[in-house]
Image (tube, each protein chain N blue to C red):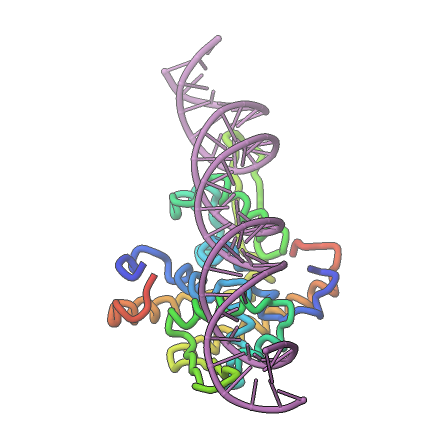
Length: 115
Length: 115
DNA sequence: ATACTTAGTAACAAAAATAATACTATGTAG
DNA sequence: CTACATAGTATTATTTTTGTTACTAAGTAT
C-alpha cells in the first residue's frame, strides 16, 4: 500500500489505519497517557488478551503507538502514542463527541432514523 | 445498539456507524452535494453495485443519508446527507487531512511502516 | 518443586463484512 | 418483440476480522 498511496481516497486510508474494532477506544485511552498492557485489558475486559495484542501490534506497525518493554519478570510492557499518533487526537476527540451526540439522538428518537 | 447506548464508548459508537469499508468515502463524496446512485458507482468503480447499495442502506438506516426516488423509468435515485449526517462533516474532513498526512509520511519513510 | 505473575504466541473456530453472479422491474428506442 | 437503461434484490461464495483456547517464558513467593 505504501507504493500506491495516491490512488486511494485519503479518507479511506485513515479508516484503514484506525478502523479496527478496538483501535478507536485504544487510542482514546492512550490519549490520557502511557498505559500498561494489563491496564488496557482491565479497561476493556471484553477485549481478549489475544485480540488486544493484535490491535496493538497493528497500531505499532503503523507508527501510531510505541511499545516499550521493561526487562523484568513478570513482564512489563507499556504502550503510548507516538508523536505521529498524537496527530490523531483531534479525530478521536471529535468521534467521541459525535458518538455522544448519536447516543442522545438515539435516546430521543428510538423508533425513527430519518431526518 | 440503540437499546444499550450508554454502555459502550462513544468512540466505538461512531465507528459502528461510519466504519464500513466504503462509508467514509461515500460520506466524503456526499459532502459536496446530492448524488445519484450511478454517480457514486462511477466515482468508485471498485465498489460493486450490490455493496454500494448495502452501504447506502446502512447509512440511511442510521439517519445519516436520505434516499429520494423519482418515479420514472429508468429509475432515478438520489442520495444526500441529512442534517444529522452533516454533523459528521468535520470528522470526515479531518480524516481526509490525516490520510493525506499519512500518505506524505509513507512516501518519506517507505520502509518504516508498511502494508 | 510448584504455583503465580504478565505478556506473548500458535492453532483453530466463528462471525461478520465484502464480493460475485444472476435475476427483477419497466418505460423508451430500434 | 428485443435490447437498453437504472436501481434494486436474492443467493451464494470468499475474504477478513474477531474470538477462543491452550501453550510458553522466567523470576518470585510459598
